[in-house]
Image 1 (cartoon, one colour):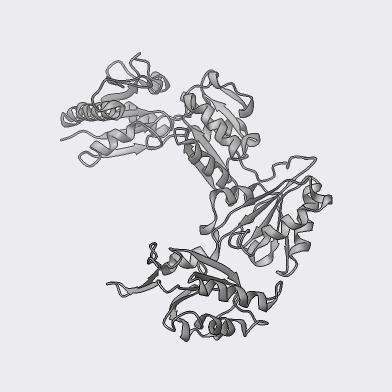
Image 2: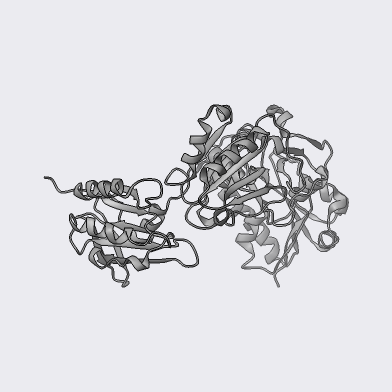
Length: 495
């Protein structure tokens, strides 16, 4: 009979943090395998040392390469793949001989551990058990004496080997994070923390529970002193003290057309970092609630007052996120904030605008690619500009054969604009011109239809609807699946 394979988690380094089951398995095993560098020292073996008997068969699995270069024809990846294959064959020989094999692993065997490479090659052929261990993440949080994640906070674990831009985006977007595999990646990780605005929160833990353990503010750590066995931690922000600032800032963010799926990582980060959220209540409801943040909801018709309130909060040292639907720069809050911020009283307040997915792009993606060529965006709301101006712009865009994205087409108080716009467009467009009627894109009431221009029904249109009116070149095709798609060719016929 074949022997049994164990992947044994030994915890973060302190032998007293080994589980009872890990000790039992080591006692039962015939063979103890552990990974090491070419110098022969093994952290895993050192953790389990007092449980290793003289009659244990020891199998050091020596990496052919760690941080140095290799002349293997397959490069680093090829050298490691060959090593894992040979190591698995060595363990398989013991298992075939009926011996019980325990592969020792620091931390948890299936958490960024080398054991998993043995597991993937052997577990389908042999009886296997994995013994979980305390991870370095848990050990680091314990050494910091700070909650790692609380309530509905999201914990993100990242390898420091990721590209810097990816690290920055993910650090900006999450609540709580741990970055592992520092060492040579530390300068890049530090830049990513700074770029995401999280450096001030970041803590550093080196060799948690081992001899030589160190805990520090990450911003104070010298890059040349950082070993591989260290982590960067962004701990829980629940009950964290907000910094006292002489001046805050205003960040105008776009939430996209619907809920959290439409947020960019940069926007998520700005919303998470804000002391105050200011916005139309409907849009604020799309943003997850975070402890310590204050929400200031208001009606949709008080843009200027909302902007001034946000700037006044920033003057008192608050970091304020002004929440807008869609993209804040497209018929939304960015203009209102910048208009007030241009006044002498607020010229010293820092203001940033972060983009979001605008309704036209969201609706176009649902329908196909109707905005594949030149197009114009026009708001049909005559609340802030006369209808005569709107009509003139519709005629100009229609006569230029531009696809039209019609924002704010109708509401309970504006019921005739869509019908009038249809009449104006039919002076320049064929009756069969396709129109995408998209309502509540991304929301629970999403409905996207393609109709003819002459059959556009104003009664179907409200403030949650956007209309995309095709040009003379826009195509509607029914595909084999039965769905209709609409697209505008990138190439325009020569005149």
